[in-house]
Image 1: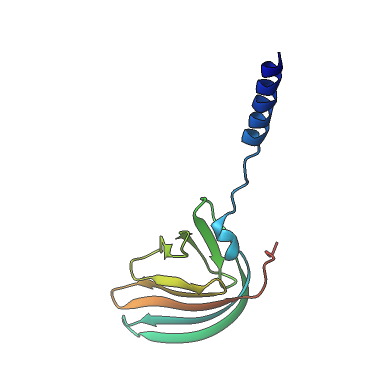
Image 2: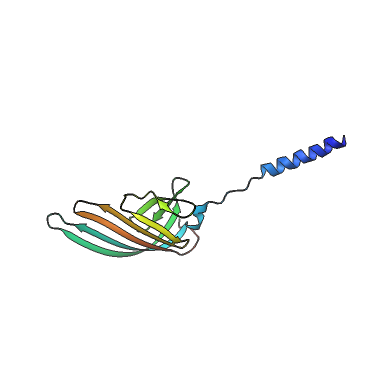
Length: 138
């Protein structure tokens, strides 16, 4: 009888501790929040008349979770955002073209070089971002 009670108590404790699973922390949390982005935008077109434009934009943007569990969405100007894959070490991939690159220099600074175009024309966005706080814009 005594053994049954001891075994019953042990089984109860095992069930309780087995049922208490730790909630996993999402590694992307350190990047999510409000950011200030300084963006240099260059546009070149060499066909017929040709043109060159250069603009610098400072934007209060946001980095939020992407559609997939390993993605983030970087909203770096009013009109521009990019969804990228980030791994647990902060390495970025999944850029829109093979000309693009970028990295998290640390948890509070990001650098992106985004480029589209070809055959005599193109647009580049050179983005430098600094995290301002841990709260996400709504």
